[in-house]
Image 1 (cartoon, rainbow, N blue to C red):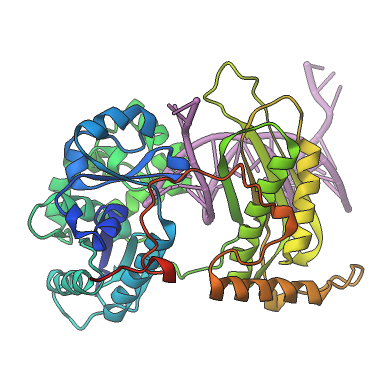
Image 2: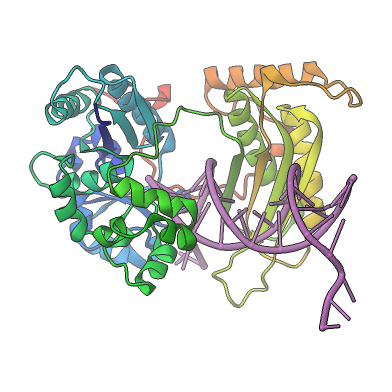
Length: 420
DNA sequence: TCTGGGGTCCTAGGACCC
DNA sequence: TCTGGGGTCCTAGGACCC
């Protein structure tokens, strides 16, 4: 029996999340902004129709948004993350063989399912997810993940059902002939330029090209795409794997010049990264820290730098990681620049349960690790930042802007929906 | 004034070894 | 003119994704 994948994608996910608890917004244009209210990262269909572009800087589109009475929201990741978990767990009740691909997408293996017609199964799933979570979804069905992505694109365009079955080879041929290569999953502007230069403009042409020829131009990843377009599945379902690196970085709410202020922000990002680290039961073997100025301010002197350091032993202890991060920051900080952003990456993560201590290294102090996990527990039960390290500071002058955030309806007691 | 954040994978090339 | 050759490991950087 051939493999059948379905790609389930939540329609305009962040905008749909905002609508769940605010029904007045249905059929009205909505956009959601990135961190710091920087760019537009999600739009409802109504906003798309107004010609508001994806990724546009907010300040450049503000006029257009106001003129069309578009509702604007800052990102509310606590809400979106929680709704995402509900959607994914609803999906898994129908199809356990699934891969959560991103916050709003999942691949399902439909072929293992009881000989049911894939479209009708998808239709059942779609209905139940909407009922249970309030989120509308699109479903693309095909023999490979790459083709399922194509099918999903078409499903989304359809006004009626948002389900499209692309398992038939002749249908694939017709559809791919009309699909520009840059619309294929895995082919972005750089590669699409290369392909245009060698005369390949649509997905059908790419499918019919010799895979090894493509490999020479686009590495094995490109070669795999050719096979996937031919209906030969090369990319299977991935299990949820622990992250190999964890990054925490943000632009500051304003430009910063002083070391102390950057240190404070970095300590906070490091704290966040450590929480994520302990959440997946890992320890880090190294740390990477970077700072940079705002590259868009051409008239300001520009500076960016980074530094890496190995920890004396794999650790998830916030105090050690914050301390090390600050040391690295001092190495790279230079006076006289207006800094826009800093970040920390925890490198070379290993499972806490499988750590072999090097004979010649110090034994890591377990008490501190334990303290870190206690802090997590307290913060989880009382709201996010009841306890923090002194180095995280209280001035928080670097805090990001998010003036238009909706309530965190599902994760904060104080922000529950009120029913009158 | 204001331009996101968080990831993965692959390859080329340098360092090092015998 | 020619300056060993071949292997492994590591890292930086570039490509892609949402």
